[in-house]
Every structure is written in C-alpha cells, then in structure tokens.
Length: 209
Image: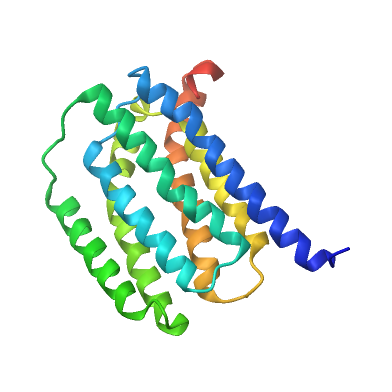
C-alpha cells in the first residue's frame, strides 16, 4: 500500500481535474442554448493563455496538480468552438485584448527558451498568469455592470475545483501555489456579482446554472 502522503495528492489532483471538466458542461449547454453570450475574443485569448499556462506550469514542476491546468486549456477551447458555431462571427479586439495577445506570444517565446530549466520556467508561468488576468478584465467589467448576462454556477464551481488542486501539491514552491490560488480568487471575483444579483432579486436557482 502506498503511503498516505503520496496517495492523497494524487487523489486530489484527479478530483480537482475531474471537477474542472464537469464545471464546463452546464456553461457549454447554456452557450449552445444562447442563454450565455461569451465574448469570443476573450475566450480565444483564454485558449491561447490556457495552453501557455499548462506548458509553463508543467515545466515549473507540477505533478498530480497538473490536471486542472490541462482542462483550463480544453474548457475554453470547447466554449470557443461552440460560441463560434452559434454566433458565427468574431468581434474586433480592443486595445486591452491586443495587449493580452502580445503577452501570450511573449510568454510562449519565453517558455520555449527556458522550459528545460525549472528555475526559470516559473517566470514564464507568472507572465502567462498576468496575461490571463488581462483577458479576464473585460469579463469582470461585464459581470459587475450587467450581472444578468452570465451565470454564477460554472464560475464558482471552476474556482472551487481549481482550488482543490493545492492539496495535490507535493513540491511546496511559490510557482506551484500561485496558479490555483489565482484561479480560485479570479473565479470568485466573477462569481460574486452574478450570485449577488440573483440572490438580491430572488431569481430561481435554475437561473443560476
């Protein structure tokens, strides 16, 4: 029997990754039903940044806690594909989104140069997180100004699921903790105004999902 301190991180890594996968299902359904209209430019950015985060997080020494980062890439890819099929058009990116594209390319280029050096790869991870935060700003502005335009369940569930991955960490470095911590608090920043609006207006729970 494997020691508990080796099996628990593996368990939480797979649990976190599995929950991250599940959280996209209701969101994808609502996008397909045209009940949620994601900004395609932002979600395409998240696809690129998600790939960057996965590659740099893996190079930074992630182990069992890598699974949420994997699905942090595949989830926005799925949403983007569905949204493009339903909307059939792309909005012109604004200046902030263009800056995010630049950050993405710089981060990928940096990763390519340092991915074999774990001590340097963490800096590519930090750059990718900054790019992800920039991409999130339009969504955060949207949900705080128009909380009826999105739904809180998937965002909150994603943050909780990603947060669980801290228990999968076996190598206690700042680089390993920064991504799940950022994802948790970033998701809660989106979830809070959506949930507050529905609670205040006594909106049925089915409209939270």
